[in-house]
Image: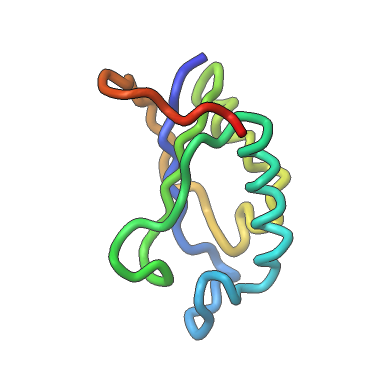
Length: 102
């Protein structure tokens, strides 16, 4: 098992007039992401920057490889619509430990 940082940016269905948690399908997206956390796939995640409604989102994923890390989000109702995957990068963790799955 390895760690990957997945960065998400605004997709074509992102509404610039709405806060992040008011975007279409927020409840379904949040439920999907909570499921990934419960399964131990997503270890940490959230928006980057001072304004949670403006910046990209970063998620720390435990997966066998980059392809598995990226594909973990395919069932997300926001995948490719409200959010798009910008980058998947392997992270070699030297300090600390990620949180244990819930």
